[in-house]
Length: 154
Image 1 (cartoon, rainbow, N blue to C red):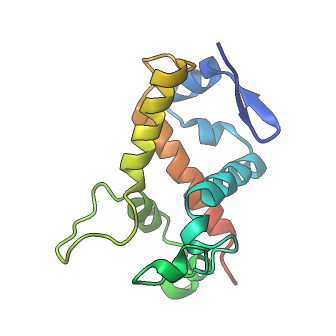
Image 2 (cartoon, rainbow, N blue to C red):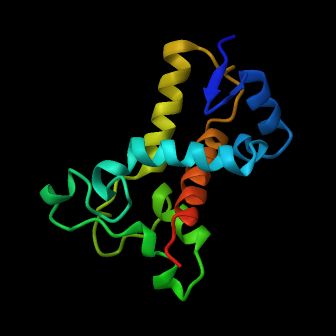
């Protein structure tokens, strides 16, 4: 079994599977500091190219997009000072959003993360097949949501 390195901690596949089977996500098994580090890693890997390292909407790809990415540090300010966790989660996931006016401009990360998890299973077999793919996808999105909440301007 290959251990999974997250920040300064190492979680074995069995530990992650145990967390999932007990009904809580592996992200919740981490302390708040490690949760935010994981979220920042997810952000920089998957969001930074468009939204920028500082989340202001000025990533290296932004100038090539027809619609400029939003400043992710202003979400709370635009929501009457409260961070809308559920809305942000659903927007990142993107799989269940109703799109009556055309396609979303942002990638559907729920689908991409699902494909990445399944590909990792097939490529390395480091996680047992009975691990719930959706739980791991949920963890990735929750880590992003927690990180985004932590970088809101006051």
